[in-house]
Image (cartoon, helix red, strand yellow):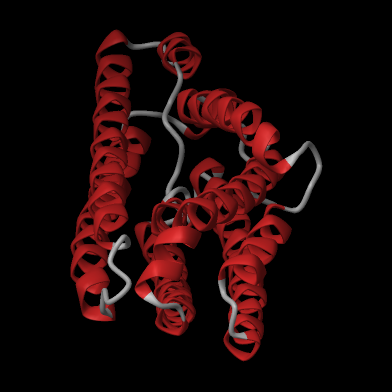
Length: 149
Length: 122
């Protein structure tokens, strides 16, 4: 549908621009890990920040699974003439609860990551950080859209 | 990062996608009585408007959060305020969406629904 097409186009545009930065098929988070190691001179803090990136990646993957599951279930309810408003409400409430939990966990990891950086380091890392996480999220969302069909 | 987080959490995640022009044509053709067809497609229009408004809100929130993310000292509460506001808008949109789906269903028979959308229920 229209949203899917818009997102596909946006994703394609993003992919084209991201390819120059991350290389086709590369792991965008590897670029971020490299950026952290090169900008944060304190080894201990840098290692801890890399661990945060791993944690965040797990949460992003979990979110993508939630997205795909909820979309499939919503579609199944929609096409089923016998489904009730309560079925939809139960599905949305459950998805919302899980999303809220994941949101909290992601924010915690994000803020822990930021708290380990100095203001100068954060400013230096931020552009790559935003692009890398966006690229990772976009690939997960694209995979979820494919699954949705 | 926060923009990405918003996209991940508030794109889809149980919310449906917009009806396409083709969906409108299919529903319009499938329902025999013009009055019912008009009522069903009007509900579809309202669903699309609803989803577009929540997409706009999501985009606005992403921009607001992108702004505060520049500060290394941004605190959780700062993010939560914007995210909670978006969650509330989403909650309201979801409720209206359910109402409109069942408005559509009121105006379509089981066979028409199945012909238009395919009933996969077992």
